[in-house]
Image 1: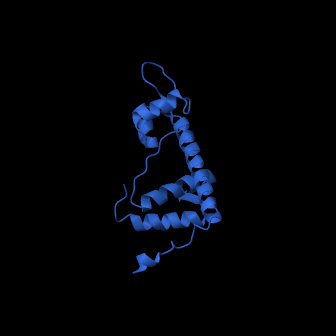
Image 2 (image 1 turned 90 degrees about the horizontal axis):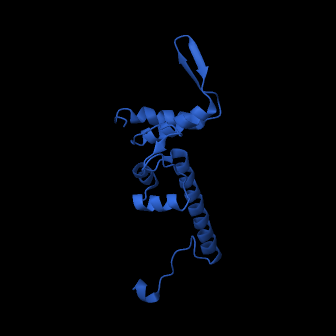
Image 3 (image 1 turned 180 degrees about the horizontal axis):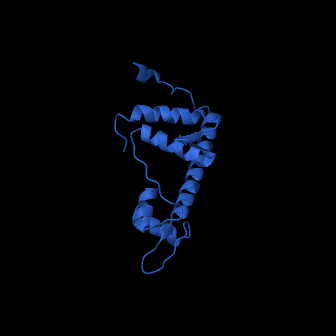
Length: 146
């Protein structure tokens, strides 16, 4: 978690990283190395999160999670996660009596779920626009105005 004194410089760093198209390099002593775009993207996200006062955890994608960890990451209960695993929605292994879920499987499921949610919201918005219900103030009844 960043200290309050760090947040202004983190916000400035995030802004600088968002400007984006030029090269970014790290220099120490007499050595300099160009920062790859993939690392720049990660640094940008980290700076944004830290500037907002939240903490960051960096975890290798090939890590395996327990059912409790995976459920927490998805924001669902453990029994709901077990149902998703058993339905084949998320891949897992069972090296012993406990299930192990690859982090990349959990993240892929979360991304799929977000895409479906966005598509449904886009469809609902399009329907509301078509019916003239989106972006228009609600009509006021004569009795309500008094």
